[in-house]
Image 1 (cartoon, rainbow, N blue to C red):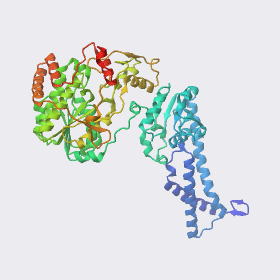
Image 2 (image 1 turned 180 degrees about the horizontal axis):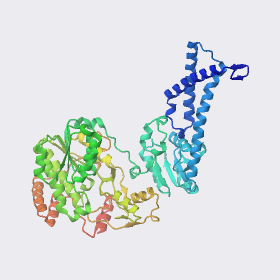
Image 3 (image 1 turned 90 degrees about the vertical axis):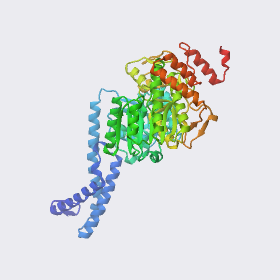
Image 4 (image 1 turned 120 degrees about the horizontal axis):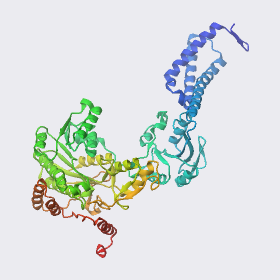
Length: 612
């Protein structure tokens, strides 16, 4: 006999045979259950439940096989084996987890922990806290949790107290010396997110957020590297406006199996347009850009994503080159054009009006003329909010382009339309990259004026607006986006400094350098008034009803303007722009402040004459 247990004498051979039998069944069941796929460093309660389920299944399987093979099974043995198996498996894993944690703490010894406040006491917070118990490479120390649910306040989650609602954020961040605030409510709506982040941005804490996509994944299926999904808060999170969702079926309906031309396809808007169009299975995508580096980057990006599935053609050309454009149009049966090529920098175009006319106006006229000549189905012109009552050369040239598009829509088989939107976050040459660079260099951050405001949208929003508008474009429309409230550039700069973990005016100075030539203090509303807008059937996208103008006089003026631009006659260009665009009101140099005071009073209904 090998050994004796109570009144039972166990033979060595029988014990070994039964042990092998149990081992084969349990190992097979654990493998089928996925137990061996779990990483030991994240062992916890979920692993224990998984182990118990697998052990019960293995025991039942053993009982069935033993009954079929007529093997004698002791009742107490049958009941104890699953628990002994779970105890052994989980003990080894938990010991490994704890030993690893001790080693990591020793490595981090001497490095002070990062005091963290969590906002949200839901499943996401629980999952994060559970992970941090076994894996905390960033040395986070969760000090408190904030939640607006009154029934949760005063309770604890994983031994961390829920101390109050959002009104306590600032107070608790000071009292507990919080270094980092993490918003862990992936399903939160944009407006509430903005309100919470606005409060957080007034603290001296760094901010992070759990992305929205995590709300679409069941929590029991999220990877154990859950904390790695947390990202820095971005300025897009502070817009407080629900982004427009792209209806893929709507856009595929008119882009699939069509030849699409994107001018300026290497720029911020043009490249994103090209990416979105590529997913809609076009017959051919033609990207036209005069800057080879931009064209190369989008070409490389699209080839990496789509390979040979996308019929892609890159044309290095300027929209000012009519002969080159004719070659492109004559060699391709183009169905849809998105015209995004343009000069957009206000101060630079004030100093170079002839270039603004050449690229913006002549370039648009060339593409419009070609679209009409080769009977393109749709032509979408990318415009700007600066075309509304323009005070700059850039805005005025964009308004001229809108007038060209609207005029051709009346006399052509091609559907000509325009899409107008505000400033794009993160686009080339926009204020955000400038601020980030200035912060990186230690400041100062330069703002033109303390009260200057702008409408903002993200690049995906801009592109989604263009694609959605194009799907319903019938010709002659100017589509505009209800962008909510304008954003103060000062607030934008302050938030960006805070998002970098710094304090405005203490760590990074903010300087006001004065309005630049042609620059407004307040941008005009994209939708000028309620009476002039029409519904499109698409949420937050409207049609601005066109202003009528004398086409004969307009095109006579346009022809003279293009000749003046080719001859670089700056003064004549400006006078002709004033004639073509009656709403153009150039700000005299040195009088930017006075003009913007008048504009502010006009918006508030104050009699402007009383200022003179």
